[in-house]
Length: 165
Image 1 (cartoon, rainbow, N blue to C red):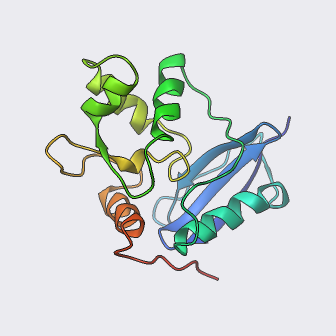
Image 2 (spheres, rainbow, N blue to C red):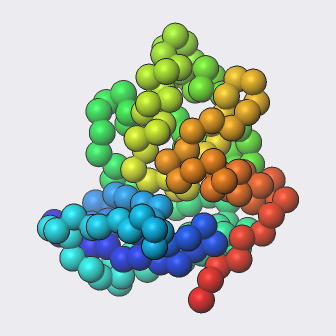
């Protein structure tokens, strides 16, 4: 099974997306200042990622709230459970790390949940941006806090992120 990848322009900057027959495997925030290299075993081919691109563009345009894509993240059993629970957080809503820990059945594991959240290989689609500190403040995000803030504003209809190109 060959992993295909492409880069797309988005209102958040360049995104490298990768997937294979099993589903979407990665969305990586990239920039000219910090270019992301694809895995040498991957092949550049946007065609298998057409539906992912379409849904991301609709999301950024404020026209899509729920992604319907096959997902194939790789992680530990605990990480997979955290990522599955992230997908249960409704569009436009946020929960705390503590609440997410309760939802995965281990209320004292908020730090472990935070680490699993931070290692999410498919941000945006697996909405790790919807998890915030118990004090209501934004905390950590792989793409940076300004991007997390933009995604939450988009979902609260306070910002419309228009697709580029």
